[in-house]
Image (tube, rainbow, N blue to C red):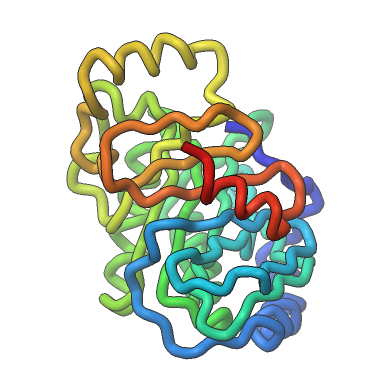
Length: 258
């Protein structure tokens, strides 16, 4: 699934130097009361754009904001932290999202040391933003599944049990034999947009089966405001991606969308 992203990453050490200021400013501009760990049933993704979400008045809608993007390359973990302001009302549920990518030209070693670097950054994101919910967005290939599973287990062991861990998922992970059972995450969010050339085949298979085969994929869905709404199953938490900045009109449309 293609998401807008910047390619200007920093080395782990250099990024940490500016990290505190940038995310502290983010926290100050979006200061919230203590929040429950379980997200509400509707979440808006706020990607790397200046977003003003103060039109959200109800506690039944939260915000999953991109806090950091990581690029795994060779032995390194390159980092880009959020630079754009994010404004929400006090009390709005916030979830920090960390996007992970792997360099396709200089493949990462996926070593234990690299995993620890990723873990360090993620734990720092949770600490400095003061959130009690975290989402990892990593389109891991089959050769990366073992690394990802281990990373999630290590993060789970280091985070407070009150921190809710969500991960996004390719639909292919949910429609057949999968690596997902037993992962250390509270939620798996199948991404039902930007699905690529196998979209119709995947949807046909899911419709025939009545739901996703993998139980972990039956609690939430990821949708986009610029594609037809696809509903699978009932009582799902819905995450919405908007290709343009959020505003009250765009939000009201998803409320009235059948």
